[in-house]
Image (cartoon, rainbow, N blue to C red):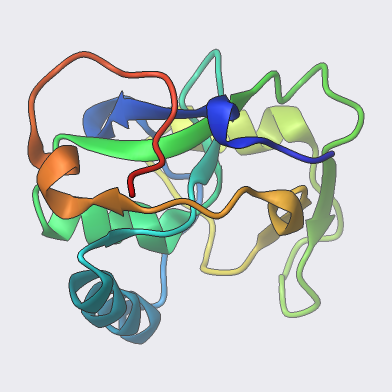
Length: 148
């Protein structure tokens, strides 16, 4: 599936829910790059019903570290969208996983280890640039997220 710029929404950071841990060194590198770029250049992907993060845990952690109010996200109907493929990374200790188990983990107080799941949709995200200043504003979600 391919996404367009108009599919990107700015959602409250606190609405999102992680289902796996991050690698701190990767987050620190991304934090440096985000500060250098003064913004986000790739949206997260999340389930529209629950806020479960499907792709973008490190970007989410950067937003939390920077205490941003909002973050660019493409929201999808995770359980019903058959074009979203869920896989396990080779280093995962799990035999199998379902979309419902991913959501259940996000809604629990536990997290899978880093790089447990992989969702095959993130390679088709629109390029964006949303400034850190815009993401720190406490205003309602706005359609689109591209800034010149």
